[in-house]
Length: 474
Image 1 (spheres, rainbow, N blue to C red):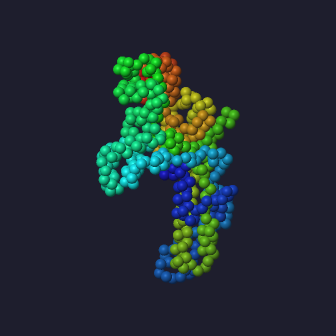
Image 2: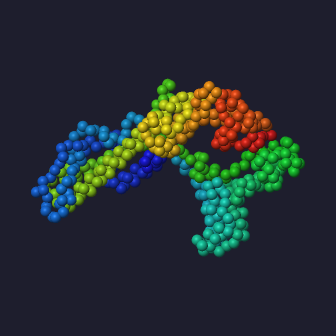
């Protein structure tokens, strides 16, 4: 189960660990099959008691059976082959681009050298940069930072000095970095643009005096308070929406939105026929070490077997067994992944052919568990941790699971379909008069979907769409 949950991108590291721990397991070279051609069962090998030195402990080793490790037969070729025709070779290397740019913290640390401070203050500034979160905010209390500096670095300072250094760091790029909250972050960016005209100055006044009203789109109150015309308010809104609420998110490898996903599966539409392949990184070329097999054969051929030799062959046998077990687990992982994804593909065939979310059928974990014969918990592990690449984009497998909803005709449809229609209705609305949940409920009912207003509100929230008032635009 642990191997099953490991993402494709991390599987190579797990295999590397196993290779380092078990010398009986090795990676096959390109073009070699991963099998145990000559480690197959033959007649049981038994050694006579006369062949052993009588040292008082031979009973522990009398029943060593190594027959399956020294067979020269090849009737079972392929038993431990970890690759087959389900793995594309040519395209996998291009799905994991590598980012070479500096990280967010690298960029900030480089700018620390521009500060006109002594060594002690430099260390405080380093601590401040290290205290920023991934979005570029300084969310820790100044008192906590002061305490950390005292206890961990033996630097005695106070909040006033720390605040002064924060002000200097806030002049770093990207603009808005080291802010304590969203309001300060946006204002820091606007201050950098203060010489760009009256629109920026008005935007500063709006955020400074009416930040809460602006976030809740109480525009009328803002206009009355600052005596702004509709045109001036529109300009203010344009200035503010161009700002970056997460300055740390656009620099280097820290941006989670830009993190790369290595797909576990590929689905191709070949003239109307869906073809499923498993990323070949899931099919490592593994085999049993030739050297370890040769040692077993040498032991088999020998006539005199003392205690030291028997201990050695037991160690070798254990390592080979562990290697065989690991290869079996890799093969079982491949089988489980393909079986689960194959059942999902067949169930959601119309979606994979068209990319239309309204074509998705209701599907729960139990449906796939019944089709594959797997446990529901196993299907859940695959669905939550694996991705499939299609011509319409890359999706996490859990995307394809949804409950059902009945229509006027009694047909069961996917809640995913209803959410897509709800999203389309909101996208097409007049933003000056956005649709309320009650109106959206009526529109869905008219389309034949039996749905309550509270359910519409729940789906809207799941889609991260705000209420009508907050969607209003001038």
